[in-house]
Length: 387
Ligand code: LRH
Ligand code: MN
Image (cartoon, rainbow, N blue to C red; front, top):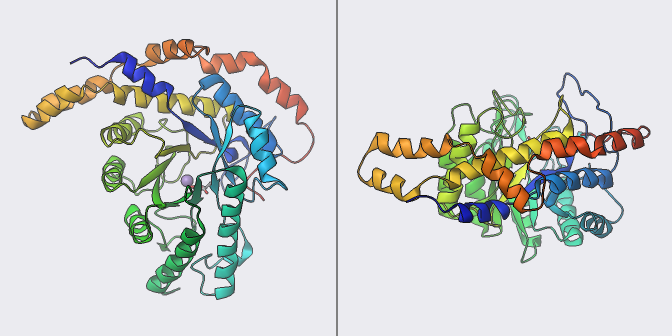
């Protein structure tokens, strides 16, 4: 049975990809941060740039904030500022990885005073969600150790569980937290939330407002990420994605750039698992260290659209009947036919039907927006990963 293109277009039109405020600021590695022209200096200017990505793609209506990188006096006013530019404030990202006190950990630190301080920040982030109307609090902990024996692995899990329970308690009925895991870095011996299983176990104990977020750059090489996605969806515990791609470690490159086939396989499991809904937050978490920021985000959104369109074109009936028949090559062929389909004409057509330019990259380049911000943002401190 051929796939209903109208249905595919309807799904793509309803897609919602969240861009991260920090992708518009300067970023780099421990070796160097290459500053770029026209980089935003304030959370408001980051929102202006995020609004451009939505203007040209039509599917990026929210922007995630990171606290304190996006600290403002009045978060409700910031939410209005965003709405006036056609976007909304999305997930609030906590940051307990840059303060001197967190050298030996934040919520897992041996020192109860440091744990109290870290928890205080997490609870402040929920206050911010109340002001911005955000549903999601994204929790990533850099907590871990560098040498065996440095601290008690079990005791650190007790401390983590205590903090998560306190945050869970504070969440409103329509709010949830997404617990992110990461194999390593900045800790190089043990990380307190190193893998999906640890995040899943903590979230399961707490309840429905605690979900797992899958950052596609946070796994050991060779990990079958789509298996994790399928499993968490089946458990009703997949809260969202931090999309990016990597060749080696947490490279935070453009999603789909390093491994477009993996992104397709992930989106296939999302669709198979009924995850193509607002219950799953599709967020980008990237750093454009050497490429222009706004075009980098537009290209990334297009990469997610292309992988999603290909996954929506999988002939489900043919696939299931080949699978039931044990027809290994047949099933794989159905899968690869969708992946090898050039969906760019379909997406260009869809953009035109949405009243958008079929080529968002060219349209942005022609818009003169970059030249405008380059001239406007000459003075002042460009935003980056510093508070
Ligand atoms: C950690 C991480 C986390 C964010 C940070 C910007 O590596 O993926 O999601 O807080 O990047
Ligand atoms: Mn992330």
